[in-house]
Length: 230
Image (cartoon, rainbow, N blue to C red; front, top):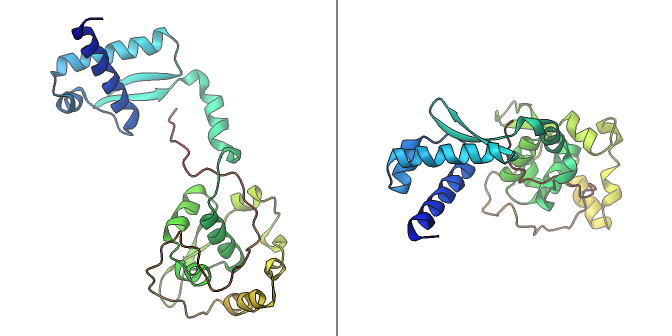
């Protein structure tokens, strides 16, 4: 392979990488600006890639849309992709997410500040992640502060094998000692708690006064499932 062929191959690989990393269609002009080459050369590369994927019956296709080029999964494999995306067995919840989910399950409806009061750390990130996964949802607004209140969803019950929230075991069963039980009683006895409004703690900081096992075992729910479009 001479230098020119090597350069073309490298440029094609770069175009492929850019298309793969973009969630939006990329036009030949956009790609040309990034690569500092002519739009005509980019169009030739895009056409070659599209033909290459089709000829080799690859699992992805490169299509031209109104406004640009974008990668798609092959329609022939739609059923497999759908089954994979809808399966929660390939996903995993972090310890922080499990803690926040447990608090919401037992205290619902509860605000972000309510979750923070129990965990002792800011939980905005994990709450957003749980909403994205469909395990919790906004169920109303706090009458006093208009803060969003969260509760569990039907998907939560399905994933944890529960018929209803009433089947959640008594939370105190998971307290390791009397001190922890008292901590639970104080924090969860009422929803009208004086929740702290500010905290510099990071949501991954697990230092609290009393260590409490909130009772939900770790399940496979990966937060980094890649977005696939049929």
